Length: 187
Ligand SMILES: C[S@@+](CC[C@H](N)C(=O)[O-])C[C@H]1O[C@@H](n2cnc3c(N)ncnc32)[C@H](O)[C@@H]1O
Image (cartoon, rainbow, N blue to C red; front, top):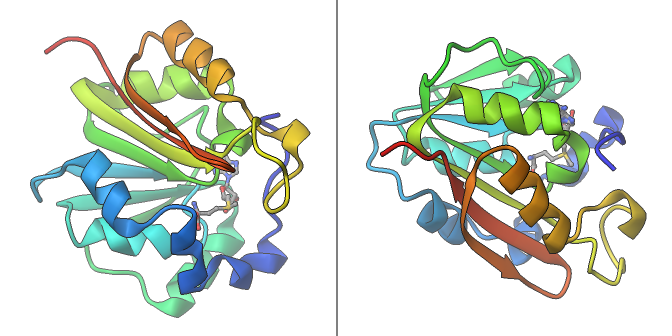
């Protein structure tokens, strides 16, 4: 877990409205609860499929991805003016402490969520800042998505967030996925 990286050569598979069956733009935006002024990180932004949905409701979005090829695909598609692509790993974000109000990640938590990455997100989020993630669940059947062995279970997610000092506000389990909202203490 936390090691397999999505193959950029298959980036076109990340585009298409059927993806909203796993997590819709509405539930993502509802969980983020933005007022339109915030700076938000998309962790593992890929082709920007969900980045675009969040950008319309945020002040600025930092689209963080480790693969320049993903940013190239996004650039070809058209990056909104308030989105800045950032090539970085989640464990080492080129951002100052407490400089973003929210972070989100779609279908990528299993690829990046090491203890170091969660500590890094806790560092760059401002007190009261919100982390929202939807991903394939280790309790799922594995009929779609990455192999079950590469995913985290909701129980593991609870432990990871607690170890990173984040407060779990909500964790919803679905047949194949989960969605959680966690916050940084301090407000
Ligand atoms: C399965 S894709 C999902 C992309 C996007 N979130 C979406 O839902 O369309 C995962 C993306 O996360 C990126 N990624 C994986 N591990 C990462 C890490 N540790 N730091 C930054 N990006 C990472 C991969 O390069 C890939 O573009």
